[in-house]
Length: 148
Image (spheres, rainbow, N blue to C red):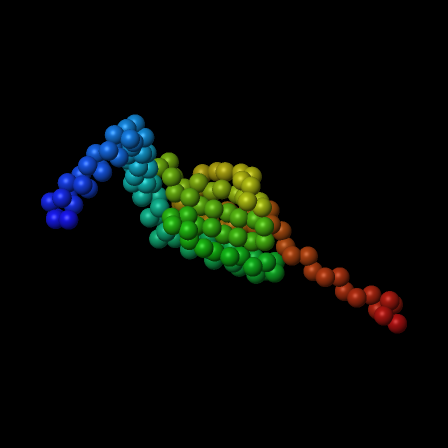
């Protein structure tokens, strides 16, 4: 098969696919355009979240408070989302075109959502979230009378 035959065959396939897709292809293009516009609108907030002093302070306070409570706080970036996890609790900070939203999750179910002020004190958010987690209960000390 020559190059021109191959090219002609590919063009026919593309035309027939466009005819089959019809409105579906247009809907997909529109969805991609709106997703792109939304991502571009959220970009300044994503940049602030990624590189701002609020995030560094939040991570520092969350790990310090968790350490004091004997609770490991796991921190991970998932794309533009910052996730903090402690036991079955999560706090996800997600940039949106309207600002950064904090999503509070318990066992994967969202329990609360609020807008985050990136100019505020990050310790306040860390304490409020970790108060929902609570300290790790310490094992009871053995009773000396029972051991004898």
